[in-house]
Image 1 (cartoon, rainbow, N blue to C red):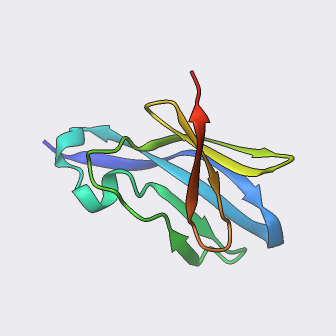
Image 2: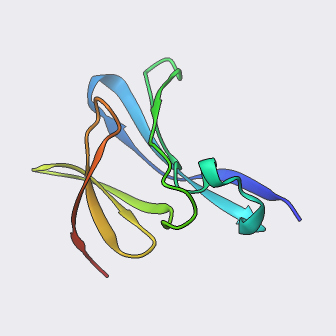
Image 3: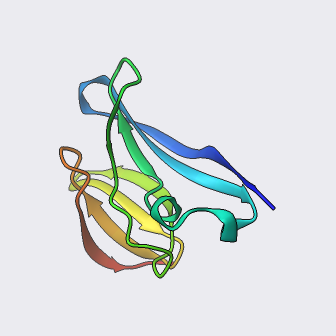
Length: 99
């Protein structure tokens, strides 16, 4: 079986950039390990990829939510763990568990 990648959620980022979280339809076991939880990408105003979040392999769940807060941009994975996202580098810092 195969899978399809689609834009699950997207928000505007500073500088006219766009932050996108991708979801997968179909057989999740066929999604390559290096793509499964590296499903967050930042694009510039012209649609060029600036960075893709670093994958941790399938032992970590993929990202499913994104939110701009007064403290910065946060993403949340399927397990309910929230992370602060560095929009310059794509680096993440674990914050807390949420459900």
